[in-house]
Image 1 (cartoon, helix red, strand yellow):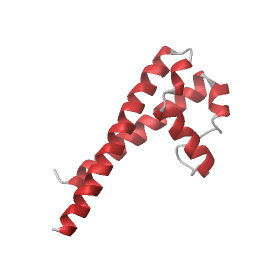
Image 2 (tube, helix red, strand yellow):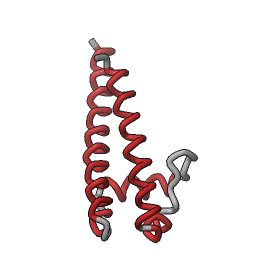
Image 3 (tube, rainbow, N blue to C red):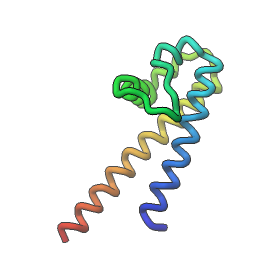
Length: 101
């Protein structure tokens, strides 16, 4: 598999995970969803809301939610985001390394 194929596949998985997590957050913990700025997976969020969402997921702030299924989904999303960031950095470094050699 080529790196672009892997990145596209990871992006599709990530979009689905984000959509499911924020749909369930809106449905099951509406106050928390509103506190985050009512994130929308389809329309662009402003930079402040985007940063709030990223920080919320990567730091695991969702662990305090009463819905255990939502917490489990949030953990999966957090693991995915960390993996995706590391993979993106690795591919970026490989790209620049290939340019230098």
